[in-house]
Length: 211
Ligand SMILES: Nc1ncnc2c1ncn2[C@@H]1O[C@H](COP(=O)(O)OP(=O)(O)O)[C@@H](O)[C@H]1O
Ligand SMILES: [Mg+2]
Image (cartoon, rainbow, N blue to C red; front, side):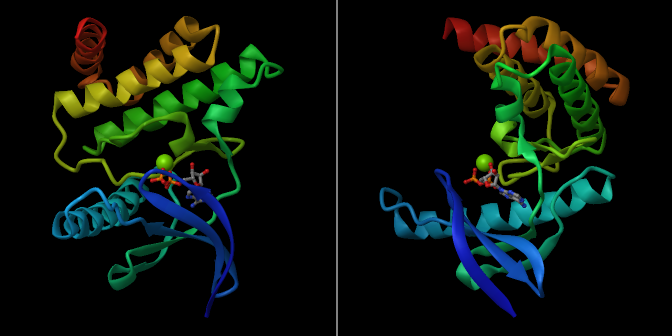
């Protein structure tokens, strides 16, 4: 039913394998054990995160955002089988020196709009870096929601925006202009709370800088 091929990525928390599921292109995300964590605590964290990730991927999708479809959740093997999305990680697009400014602007505009909609649906991402967002050619898709929340407050929302700003600063020379475009699109998609959330993101930035 399910066959495994090569390994696609190994992050801090999980290993991603290319796979197929009922003949469809899939990825299998296997949560890694952490030897430095107490075994019982580690098992609880793995189980919590995989369940959070599955729930938030589904709920974000239900709110109209692009996320991979969940094909299978195997709690006994701590494995999530997901639709394989053919997209390009935002990191790659943003740091590509031969990429045009217009393309970067289009991508961050879509990121802002999508994040605004995610937040308006009361979901925070929790780990919003350029490797956890794919550019699908016409829109962005969110991956890796295991640190997200379904009951976020200003702080969680603000952290999402702050991580985008940090990423842009690391990757692009035109970060400032791009972050403005991102924020404008975000505000349009989440008009009710955008002002307070943007203010919190600025506050977080100050805290991080002078900590
Ligand atoms: N559904 C998917 N389709 C295509 N690529 C994926 C998918 N899920 C993960 N990836 C790739 O694997 C990488 C790591 O996956 P991710 O879910 O972010 O795991 P981690 O928790 O280890 O960061 C992503 O940055 C992306 O490049
Ligand atoms: Mg990731």
